[in-house]
Length: 364
Image (cartoon, rainbow, N blue to C red; front, side):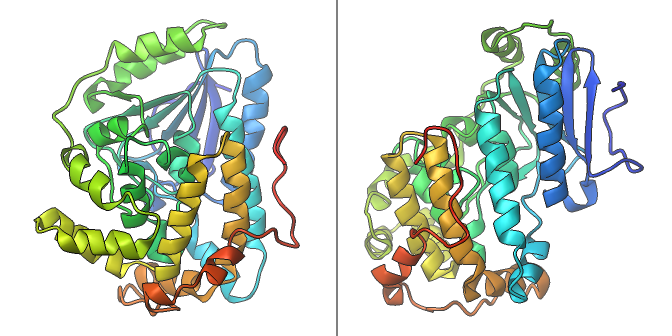
């Protein structure tokens, strides 16, 4: 593997894996699609990690995105939509392999650094959010907007969000609201905020970390470039978010927001009313279960069960149609009302499927 300039490699594949100095580089290379993740890219990442893990000259792994719009806008939703419409199996295959990579990243034996500049959504959170070192900038927007597609925050999103301060994770998961760099650090979705203009210098220093550099040495380097930002807009609303999102039912959360008189509460209420009712209830259930989970893998097993049910549901196909394909932003959810999503409907998302569960070491 030879060093090249940091840019969109238009003549290369969708994933560029190479060594630069002592760093193993993983560059998502679909800039026109904001580096949306495909099954092929997931498999290439896994193979590259095989190489990086055993190469004694590689001290760290660095994840980055080509182009200037973001690290990764999520998974290949259109491809999943097309497969779901014809009863295909892309969802089962893609999520099984993607979630396995998410878990592998979380326990990778060498420092794994994610540069989360620009948009980082959905599947991008799965590749970056479980990294040992997560670097954001003033241009970062981190979001898990899946409920608006009749889905839920997956790729270990329920694990990450359930560990945010107070009810911040519940708010982010149910509304799909994007967190800027400051709020991403506050929410536990990132570790260090830097100025994007400092990245080329920091990146160069990362590639010079000697073999054997551990997580502490890597973090010490990154924090040298850290900056502080003003309190983020989500953190500023912490008290209201904690007050209104502390309930274990969507109906109670909606009622609590209706009792508030602020513009923020009204905007949040409007956002929830646009989302898939079943997506909201399934997401809240998964977030609450994740709070008592003891590992990322446990959450991924649960998310895989739920994802298979989502793939078979009409809401996912309809949500993608309304927001991504036809873009009329007028999805016809089923059921259409929150109160019509019964406990029996939600229970289907938690049950084992004939396709089988994900299998991880030490997870039943």
